[in-house]
Image 1 (cartoon, rainbow, N blue to C red):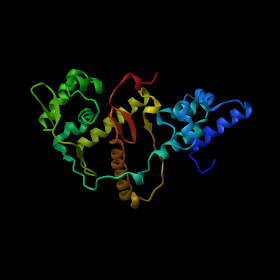
Image 2 (image 1 turned 180 degrees about the vertical axis):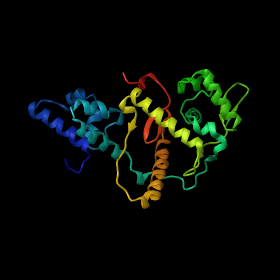
Image 3 (image 1 turned 45 degrees about the vertical axis):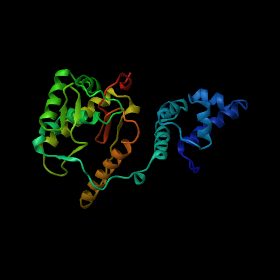
Image 4 (image 1 turned 60 degrees about the vertical axis):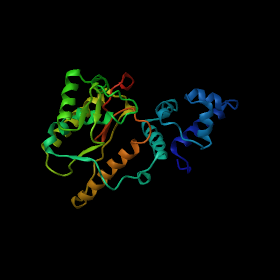
Length: 263
């Protein structure tokens, strides 16, 4: 299907036209009802004035009875209308605090980074109870994580027990042997296996590619991967942030709500 328009839009138009062919009186309003989209929204989508809302992509693909390959093309074509890597700008100077091996626990155990990232959410109560709820931790584990961050000078607690982040952002070294980073990567892989079973498909992304390569290109490949991570961060920092995710490239939530779980 090559019509000069996004695949998802072509499939919606094609499906609507087939239904109208079988029933000339079949209206846009009826079609909107059948695929679960507001009629005014669907009208703007079909005219090309706005994209299909990302949150509706999975259930519309289901209503269209798309096979696995068509479903992937449908959802990917919608994603491509949102943004491209070349359009995302990143700061050429990385001002994040560099963490070295002396911050072993902070680097190695995922809860520390996740707690620091909670401060970027639209709503965060800054209490230990809120941390425990958001990250699905026990209060005892939460207190240990908070204490580690305080001792390392990354977190402060005021007289009311409210938490404050000392540095806006932190980072680790690249391509340097590190026991802490190895431990961190192992935890990320273990978490990835756990989230694969627990998190609904539309709220996570797991992807991989098997490639033959020239080892001389490996340094350049690493640079591209780092640029991709930076651009992903720049993209996802926009808007009202409500959840904390891990990108590996396994992309899954670290914050926990009932709506996220597989039913």
